[in-house]
Length: 542
Image (spheres, rainbow, N blue to C red):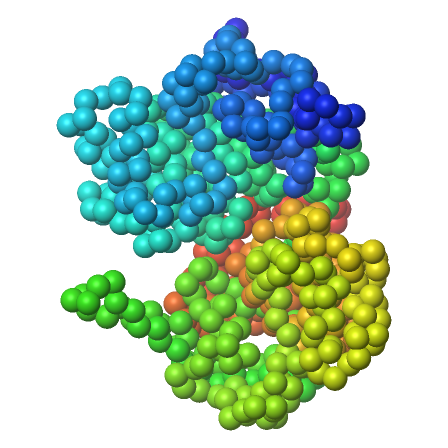
């Protein structure tokens, strides 16, 4: 029997001084064989990424391996000399990081960065490096592989940047590929392309893959085996089919049940009156790469028509660049439209000025995708929330009472008032942003990818919170998302956008049961784990 490619035994990672609570990883054991994909699953803080970083010797300076072994090819990597680890890293073991725009050097062309990864290990001559880069770009499906190497990271889409990262990881034919949440923030169609690419390359190259994710749908699509982590410990592991079809622990069952889009779809409230009406909305962005270049035109909105009814949730779905976020910002006049009409509660939004516009923005609040970027890191949470009500006439005492009440409603207590944003998890920060928005007593909430980067269980909590608030206070929502599972979970009606146009809109049940547009069908087919969850839903029904 062939020996495993990677073996981790009883690994403990933490601070050299401290009790068990300081352990980031507490006794993990797992293995990865050649030509196998092992998915490491768990929520933020479970120890997934820390384990991956330990394999490559990339742990934070204060975190140490307190006990255990990490064996690769029979050699223990813990305590390996820096020179030996550098020779191994990027050569025999390679890694794809979660955020390619952060991992890539913004000041260097992508071709140069991949070439450096090849040259540093000296496996081929310098004159052959350029041809190797082009070959890699072709293998990962980048357009025009001979010339795209001259582009900088910011000139590429998110999916293209991730393909560059995959090309860099594969540059020296590694035996083990570690993929750390490589598809988390990508559109469903791009995500599907990246997953198919990794699986295809893994089989062609006979690689072992350790794939880190919190998305059970991804696990269902690609995993041979699954390791489930919680609080630094392995709670369950085994063959993917066995773990997903017959989970042995409550935590694994909870992760499966938290996946959005599996519940009963509520009927749309067709009898309700219109709150927000958009007619023939248009917006074109023009930019130049250089003084001599022809202007580049990007159509963000091309005759958009939609209606949000009072008390309803309208989901706007589409890939990056489809115009979803631009639409949300045009509703609030954060971006001025080029043409068309926006009416809110019968009033023309584009004609609003001064105090009228200010009062409109109080009634229509927005929650952005990244809660950490939305909150001032220098301000305590209480101060971030009270400034809104105070700006509209509330006394500080009244504003503090409002902030305390809403922090309680979103599942955080008054103790959160005197803490800073960095002291909270991602899900908690998003709850704070929701509390801040609702502190102004809006009648409409715009959620712009508000749950896209959250763990599946935290995502489920935030979606339930929004649904409960909708039922309790009659909140109307314009919900921007690229995830059809999330749209199915929360929306009464769905609008599908592509290249600035609405290609389809229908009640949620109708759109999922009988999509009319080819593009909608492609989006539905790209949803991770769709077949698995369809089978599970059928089994539950029986």
